[in-house]
Image 1: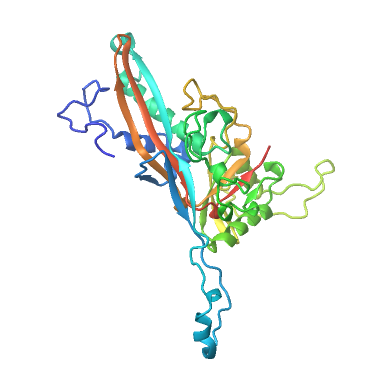
Image 2 (image 1 turned 30 degrees about the vertical axis):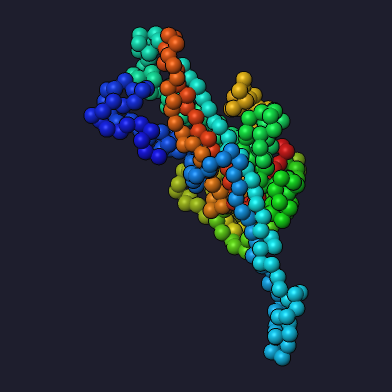
Length: 370
């Protein structure tokens, strides 16, 4: 990833540097580090290179189902001579496809802005502009990866480009979908791992346990998972720790009250839940503003989202196994200078990458409509 910018203090700093002071940051490092708290998925997800085609594939498989398998010594040789006693160990083997997506931003630094402006806090207009574009393209990637569905105007995410729009990469919500026919039937996320009934405010601990149980029944491993959750869903987990009256109008006392230990001398009230430990696994709650965005405006080239509605996203949550996630790159984030046509410096910041959910069976979701 090194080498996108020259880090040698004795040499020129690159086409967008003022050439004074300090070394330039490696671009690929910047896009994964800048403002990580606001783009949690891109910050957390493992990165990989090596995609050589617009459509790439990865294999999925299941363990062989156990059986009684008691063998009689007398008939052992005879049994091995029967075709029915042999089985194909790769009968469940299948392939999942996805596309890479070209994330692209272009910007202009006006001639007067560059040479005659003196903005407080921005001594180098070009460097400041590049940093903001890096933050913007990272958010573009986060919004794309955390989507639940792909807008109809945004092209195709399976097989090849259908000629109606650009390549787009399948998002989390399209992988974690029990009815998505683009996922091999044996590897679709079970419906029991996706809770989508009612509002997030109606979610109960029992329902969370049910989702974790469904995931455990697929993987056989009770492990720590990440719940990338909207703000309303995050608050509902906090509500699990509170007691309420069964009849607020008549002020009838609750029949079940949860008590928590807290130092009485502490003048702070702690009211948050960051980890949910269930019978079949642990959820680390990571709040996000980018889940399930809709009402996208793709712009003139269809390469980015410039506006969205966050109503659904506040109530959505994706249960992620980070060991089975990858953001795969065909082209690492880079800056390309464009011809100066007299109005000022122009440049492009872009990356080409796709999302891989290496086995959707081990994932879950909370997809509340309100």
